[in-house]
Amino acid sequence: MAKIIAIANQKGGVGKTTTAVNLAASLAAAEKRTLLVDMDPQANACTGLGIDKSQLQSTVYHALLGEVDAREIIVSTELDLLRVLPSNTDLIGAEIELVTALAREVKLKSALDPLLNDFDFMVIDCPPSLGLLTVNALTAADSVLVPLQCEFYAMEGLSQLMNTIRIIKTQLNPRLAIHGILLTMFDGRNNLSHQVSEEIRTHFNGKVFHTVIPRNVRLSEAPSHGLPVLLYDVNSKGTAAYLDLAREIIGMGV
Ligand code: ADP
Ligand code: MG
Image 1 (spheres, rainbow, N blue to C red):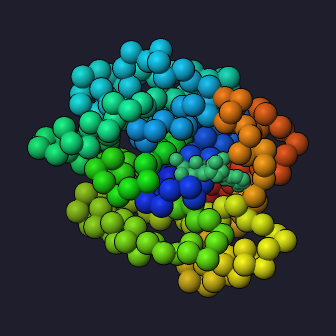
Image 2 (spheres, protein in one colour; image 1 turned 30 degrees about the vertical axis):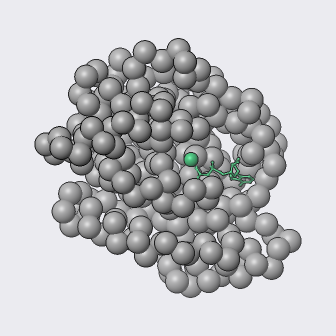
Protein backbone atom coordinates (compact mmCIF):
# COMPACT_ATOMS: atom_id res chain seq x y z
CA MET A 1 0.00 0.00 0.00
CA ALA A 2 1.39 3.37 -1.01
CA LYS A 3 2.13 5.95 1.66
CA ILE A 4 0.77 9.30 0.51
CA ILE A 5 2.62 12.49 1.48
CA ALA A 6 1.13 15.92 0.72
CA ILE A 7 3.62 18.79 0.41
CA ALA A 8 1.63 21.80 1.59
CA ASN A 9 2.05 25.45 2.58
CA GLN A 10 -0.24 28.17 1.26
CA LYS A 11 2.75 30.49 0.88
CA GLY A 12 4.36 30.55 -2.54
CA GLY A 13 8.09 30.17 -3.05
CA VAL A 14 8.85 28.15 0.08
CA GLY A 15 10.16 25.10 -1.79
CA LYS A 16 7.05 22.90 -2.15
CA THR A 17 7.61 21.98 -5.78
CA THR A 18 11.37 21.63 -5.39
CA THR A 19 10.73 19.29 -2.47
CA ALA A 20 7.98 17.32 -4.22
CA VAL A 21 10.12 16.71 -7.32
CA ASN A 22 13.37 15.94 -5.55
CA LEU A 23 11.89 13.93 -2.69
CA ALA A 24 9.94 11.85 -5.23
CA ALA A 25 13.07 11.35 -7.36
CA SER A 26 15.12 10.41 -4.28
CA LEU A 27 12.50 7.87 -3.16
CA ALA A 28 12.61 6.37 -6.67
CA ALA A 29 16.41 6.30 -6.51
CA ALA A 30 16.05 4.37 -3.24
CA GLU A 31 14.11 1.73 -5.23
CA LYS A 32 10.68 2.82 -4.07
CA ARG A 33 7.96 2.87 -6.74
CA THR A 34 6.90 6.52 -6.57
CA LEU A 35 4.09 8.59 -8.06
CA LEU A 36 4.36 12.37 -8.09
CA VAL A 37 0.86 13.89 -8.17
CA ASP A 38 0.84 17.44 -9.51
CA MET A 39 -2.08 19.33 -7.91
CA ASP A 40 -0.86 22.79 -8.91
CA PRO A 41 -2.44 24.32 -12.06
CA GLN A 42 0.94 26.00 -12.69
CA ALA A 43 2.34 22.47 -13.19
CA ASN A 44 5.87 23.47 -12.22
CA ALA A 45 6.56 19.92 -11.06
CA CYS A 46 5.73 18.62 -14.56
CA THR A 47 7.92 21.22 -16.23
CA GLY A 48 10.72 20.45 -13.78
CA LEU A 49 10.63 16.82 -14.87
CA GLY A 50 10.70 17.66 -18.56
CA ILE A 51 7.05 16.78 -19.24
CA ASP A 52 5.66 18.53 -22.30
CA LYS A 53 2.30 19.85 -21.09
CA SER A 54 1.10 20.60 -24.63
CA GLN A 55 1.23 16.87 -25.42
CA LEU A 56 -1.07 15.83 -22.58
CA GLN A 57 -4.49 14.51 -23.62
CA SER A 58 -5.80 14.22 -20.08
CA THR A 59 -4.57 15.41 -16.72
CA VAL A 60 -5.32 15.10 -13.02
CA TYR A 61 -8.22 17.50 -13.72
CA HIS A 62 -10.04 14.82 -15.73
CA ALA A 63 -9.26 12.23 -13.06
CA LEU A 64 -10.75 14.52 -10.37
CA LEU A 65 -13.93 14.90 -12.40
CA GLY A 66 -14.04 11.11 -12.79
CA GLU A 67 -13.81 11.36 -16.59
CA VAL A 68 -10.73 9.14 -16.89
CA ASP A 69 -8.99 6.44 -14.89
CA ALA A 70 -5.86 7.93 -13.29
CA ARG A 71 -3.91 4.84 -14.44
CA GLU A 72 -4.40 5.86 -18.06
CA ILE A 73 -2.86 9.32 -17.73
CA ILE A 74 0.28 8.54 -15.76
CA VAL A 75 3.46 9.57 -17.57
CA SER A 76 6.96 8.17 -17.16
CA THR A 77 10.17 10.06 -16.42
CA GLU A 78 13.92 9.60 -16.86
CA LEU A 79 13.90 7.58 -13.63
CA ASP A 80 12.45 4.06 -14.00
CA LEU A 81 10.56 4.07 -10.73
CA LEU A 82 9.24 7.64 -10.88
CA ARG A 83 5.89 8.30 -12.57
CA VAL A 84 3.82 11.48 -12.69
CA LEU A 85 0.12 12.23 -12.60
CA PRO A 86 0.37 15.46 -14.58
CA SER A 87 -1.48 18.74 -14.35
CA ASN A 88 -1.94 21.84 -16.45
CA THR A 89 -3.93 25.08 -16.31
CA ASP A 90 -7.22 23.14 -16.79
CA LEU A 91 -6.95 22.44 -13.08
CA ILE A 92 -7.88 26.06 -12.29
CA GLY A 93 -11.40 25.16 -13.43
CA ALA A 94 -11.65 22.26 -10.99
CA GLU A 95 -11.70 24.61 -7.98
CA ILE A 96 -14.91 26.11 -9.38
CA GLU A 97 -16.48 23.11 -11.09
CA LEU A 98 -16.19 20.90 -8.02
CA VAL A 99 -17.81 23.41 -5.66
CA THR A 100 -21.28 22.00 -6.21
CA ALA A 101 -20.15 18.38 -6.60
CA LEU A 102 -21.13 15.76 -4.06
CA ALA A 103 -18.22 14.68 -1.84
CA ARG A 104 -16.05 17.27 -3.53
CA GLU A 105 -13.24 16.90 -0.97
CA VAL A 106 -12.63 13.20 -1.68
CA LYS A 107 -12.25 13.37 -5.48
CA LEU A 108 -8.47 12.94 -5.42
CA LYS A 109 -8.65 10.15 -2.86
CA SER A 110 -11.13 8.28 -5.09
CA ALA A 111 -8.89 8.81 -8.13
CA LEU A 112 -5.79 7.50 -6.33
CA ASP A 113 -7.40 4.52 -4.55
CA PRO A 114 -7.08 2.12 -7.52
CA LEU A 115 -3.32 2.90 -7.71
CA LEU A 116 -2.44 2.21 -4.08
CA ASN A 117 -0.98 -1.22 -4.80
CA ASP A 118 1.09 -0.05 -7.76
CA PHE A 119 3.27 2.32 -5.71
CA ASP A 120 5.24 2.47 -2.46
CA PHE A 121 4.97 6.27 -2.17
CA MET A 122 2.84 9.04 -3.62
CA VAL A 123 4.03 12.63 -3.23
CA ILE A 124 1.46 15.37 -3.86
CA ASP A 125 2.63 18.87 -4.84
CA CYS A 126 0.00 21.38 -3.64
CA PRO A 127 -0.79 24.85 -5.01
CA PRO A 128 -0.06 27.97 -2.91
CA SER A 129 -3.53 28.21 -1.37
CA LEU A 130 -5.73 26.40 1.11
CA GLY A 131 -8.54 25.97 -1.42
CA LEU A 132 -10.29 22.85 -2.63
CA LEU A 133 -7.23 21.42 -4.41
CA THR A 134 -5.14 21.47 -1.21
CA VAL A 135 -8.11 20.15 0.77
CA ASN A 136 -8.35 17.23 -1.69
CA ALA A 137 -4.62 16.55 -1.27
CA LEU A 138 -4.86 16.58 2.54
CA THR A 139 -7.92 14.34 2.44
CA ALA A 140 -6.10 11.77 0.29
CA ALA A 141 -2.84 11.88 2.27
CA ASP A 142 -1.48 9.81 5.15
CA SER A 143 0.76 12.66 6.17
CA VAL A 144 1.61 16.24 5.40
CA LEU A 145 5.09 17.69 4.98
CA VAL A 146 5.30 21.47 5.42
CA PRO A 147 8.30 23.21 3.83
CA LEU A 148 9.32 26.40 5.63
CA GLN A 149 11.82 28.81 4.21
CA CYS A 150 14.44 29.89 6.75
CA GLU A 151 13.53 33.59 6.68
CA PHE A 152 12.02 36.11 9.05
CA TYR A 153 8.36 35.57 8.11
CA ALA A 154 8.66 31.79 7.95
CA MET A 155 5.99 31.06 10.53
CA GLU A 156 3.52 33.65 9.32
CA GLY A 157 0.34 31.95 8.12
CA LEU A 158 1.36 28.68 9.70
CA SER A 159 -1.42 28.74 12.30
CA GLN A 160 -3.96 28.97 9.46
CA LEU A 161 -2.41 25.90 7.81
CA MET A 162 -2.34 23.98 11.10
CA ASN A 163 -5.98 24.90 11.62
CA THR A 164 -6.94 23.58 8.18
CA ILE A 165 -5.04 20.35 8.91
CA ARG A 166 -6.90 19.99 12.22
CA ILE A 167 -10.30 20.49 10.58
CA ILE A 168 -9.52 17.96 7.83
CA LYS A 169 -8.31 15.50 10.46
CA THR A 170 -11.51 15.74 12.48
CA GLN A 171 -13.99 15.94 9.61
CA LEU A 172 -12.55 14.16 6.60
CA ASN A 173 -9.34 12.22 7.22
CA PRO A 174 -8.63 11.02 10.77
CA ARG A 175 -5.41 9.26 9.74
CA LEU A 176 -3.73 12.48 8.54
CA ALA A 177 -0.47 12.96 10.45
CA ILE A 178 1.83 15.95 10.45
CA HIS A 179 4.90 14.26 9.06
CA GLY A 180 6.94 17.27 9.83
CA ILE A 181 8.24 20.68 9.09
CA LEU A 182 11.05 20.79 6.54
CA LEU A 183 13.50 23.68 6.75
CA THR A 184 14.38 24.80 3.22
CA MET A 185 16.80 27.26 1.63
CA PHE A 186 18.98 27.20 4.73
CA ASP A 187 22.03 29.42 4.39
CA GLY A 188 24.69 28.42 6.92
CA ARG A 189 26.54 31.74 6.52
CA ASN A 190 23.47 33.73 7.44
CA ASN A 191 22.73 34.30 11.15
CA LEU A 192 19.04 34.73 10.46
CA SER A 193 18.84 31.23 8.97
CA HIS A 194 20.26 29.81 12.22
CA GLN A 195 17.93 31.94 14.38
CA VAL A 196 14.82 31.01 12.41
CA SER A 197 15.69 27.33 12.41
CA GLU A 198 16.24 27.34 16.22
CA GLU A 199 12.97 29.15 16.77
CA ILE A 200 11.07 26.66 14.60
CA ARG A 201 12.68 23.67 16.33
CA THR A 202 11.71 25.08 19.73
CA HIS A 203 8.18 25.85 18.62
CA PHE A 204 7.56 22.52 16.85
CA ASN A 205 9.46 20.35 19.25
CA GLY A 206 10.06 16.94 17.66
CA LYS A 207 8.04 17.71 14.53
CA VAL A 208 10.92 19.09 12.46
CA PHE A 209 12.89 16.84 10.09
CA HIS A 210 16.54 16.33 11.04
CA THR A 211 17.38 16.84 7.38
CA VAL A 212 17.72 20.52 6.45
CA ILE A 213 17.67 21.58 2.78
CA PRO A 214 20.47 24.07 2.08
CA ARG A 215 20.20 26.94 -0.36
CA ASN A 216 21.86 25.40 -3.41
CA VAL A 217 21.99 26.89 -6.89
CA ARG A 218 21.88 23.41 -8.50
CA LEU A 219 18.37 22.97 -7.06
CA SER A 220 17.19 26.11 -8.83
CA GLU A 221 18.97 25.25 -12.11
CA ALA A 222 17.84 21.63 -12.46
CA PRO A 223 14.18 22.36 -13.44
CA SER A 224 15.22 24.35 -16.51
CA HIS A 225 16.93 21.17 -17.73
CA GLY A 226 13.79 19.15 -17.02
CA LEU A 227 15.63 17.01 -14.48
CA PRO A 228 15.51 16.28 -10.77
CA VAL A 229 18.72 17.49 -9.14
CA LEU A 230 20.12 13.97 -8.71
CA LEU A 231 20.22 13.53 -12.49
CA TYR A 232 21.49 17.06 -13.06
CA ASP A 233 24.36 17.17 -10.57
CA VAL A 234 24.73 14.04 -8.49
CA ASN A 235 27.52 15.58 -6.41
CA SER A 236 25.62 18.71 -5.37
CA LYS A 237 24.58 19.53 -1.81
CA GLY A 238 20.97 19.64 -2.99
CA THR A 239 21.18 16.03 -4.20
CA ALA A 240 22.68 14.87 -0.89
CA ALA A 241 20.05 16.72 1.14
CA TYR A 242 17.05 15.26 -0.70
CA LEU A 243 18.54 11.75 -0.61
CA ASP A 244 18.92 12.22 3.17
CA LEU A 245 15.31 13.37 3.41
CA ALA A 246 14.12 10.27 1.50
CA ARG A 247 16.14 8.03 3.86
CA GLU A 248 14.72 9.85 6.89
CA ILE A 249 11.15 9.35 5.61
CA ILE A 250 11.70 5.70 4.69
CA GLY A 251 13.22 5.20 8.16
CA MET A 252 10.13 6.68 9.84
CA GLY A 253 8.07 3.88 8.33
CA VAL A 254 5.05 6.17 8.06
P1 ADP B 1 6.83 26.68 -4.17
O1 ADP B 1 6.47 25.44 -4.92
O2 ADP B 1 6.57 26.57 -2.69
O3 ADP B 1 6.21 27.91 -4.75
P2 ADP B 1 9.46 26.34 -5.35
O4 ADP B 1 9.90 24.96 -5.02
O5 ADP B 1 8.93 26.57 -6.73
O6 ADP B 1 8.43 26.87 -4.27
O7 ADP B 1 10.70 27.30 -5.05
C1 ADP B 1 10.65 28.69 -5.29
C2 ADP B 1 11.94 29.14 -5.97
O8 ADP B 1 13.05 28.89 -5.13
C3 ADP B 1 12.22 28.36 -7.26
O9 ADP B 1 12.81 29.24 -8.18
C4 ADP B 1 13.22 27.30 -6.83
O10 ADP B 1 14.07 26.91 -7.88
C5 ADP B 1 13.99 28.01 -5.73
N1 ADP B 1 14.45 27.07 -4.69
C6 ADP B 1 13.70 26.21 -3.97
N2 ADP B 1 14.44 25.54 -3.06
C7 ADP B 1 15.71 26.01 -3.21
C8 ADP B 1 16.97 25.74 -2.56
N3 ADP B 1 17.04 24.85 -1.55
N4 ADP B 1 18.06 26.40 -2.98
C9 ADP B 1 17.98 27.32 -3.97
N5 ADP B 1 16.85 27.62 -4.62
C10 ADP B 1 15.72 26.99 -4.25
MG1 MG C 1 5.05 25.14 -6.46
